[in-house]
Image (cartoon, rainbow, N blue to C red; front, side):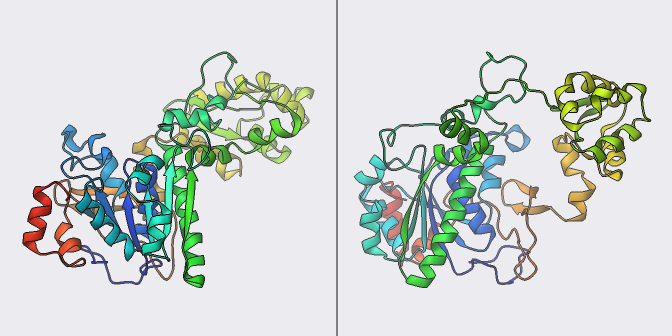
Amino acid sequence: MPEGKGCTMTEKCLSHLRVVEYSEMVAGPYCTKLLADLGAEVVKIELPNTGDEARRRGPFLRDNPDRELSGLFLYLNTNKLGVTLNPELPDGNTILKQLIASADVFVHDKAPVLMESLGLTYEHLSVLNRRLVMVSITPFGQTGPYRDYKAFDLNLYQAGGEGYLLPIQSPDPFREPVRGGGLTGECICGLSAAAAALAATFSQSATGIGQHLDISRQEVLMTMVQLELAMFPNVGYVRNRLKRPLLMALPMQCRDGYIMLSALGNREWNDLVQFMNNPAWSNDERFELWLNRHLYGDKITPHVEDFVRDRCKHELFHGLQARAVAAAPANTSEDAVKSEQLRARGFFTEVDHPRAGRLKYPGAPYKMSRTPWQACRAAPLLGEHNELIYEGRLGYTISELAVLRQNGAI
């Protein structure tokens, strides 16, 4: 993969992999971002003129709704090459198949019926490339009565059972469920797809044969429910968001925000009480056993809330952690960016983009001693690498590309 400005030639874990991505928004692009960040060459396909839907989603740099300035797109597509291509036109379909013929992995998020109509099923593509690992990310999978249903993040949070449990510890069992914050569900789907793709390429390297990975976003989210999902088929119990006896179950408001703390065991409880200067109410015999502390959590929690209300969250955080009491502030984005811990670990990195300029991005959530993570390339401009890929790799001439561009294929 051509190196970007400021990127060294250090060999990366997945430098041997070629990936073609035909997806947009979050789940598919996050999957391939994880592979690209580990060194895989990812060629991202976008429709001519319009590009990835994420280009039209904010927040936008300087509040300018420019398709090259979407923060969502810029983050999800670092370290990738970008081309424009319309696989629904015959010439575009041919070019996509040429790219796939030399790829190790093909990631898409298109509906099964569309892929069938375009001749882009695994059965067709594996004839062109028997080593191909094809990753299909759809709302409900390739089979079953829901295979052709559409769904977005909000729908899938409910279909997977996650939304029914939120907001957790609600005092109102009849209030409507919600979804998780941000695009967490989409990123989890992308992460699961990337893990499956890596496992399949490991098998591919040993056998020389690829396989089709059918990723159901509903099923991914169902794996995150964990205990709650297992309770009904085994004991017939449907757990909901209703508040249960649990000591200090929710974030507590302090002077400059919120803090979450936990004192489950006797040692932590005693250290918490000492930190609060051994208040008289803590001597109540009902609070001696850990189980009783949960059962009487509604009696204890208000006292702790009174204690933290007039104190700063970082004062509480450092004071409690010094006593090995589990505590963490509810960080704003400003808190996270200015975190001394993240600064010490070099978590944030800066990347130069030809339109957006030099911006700070979250880095990798891991440290690798031999093959370090690097942000080698900013997210591509729309069609930025057309000549590099179509002329340099597939052998198309400038005049041929001009015709393809005129007929809308690229």
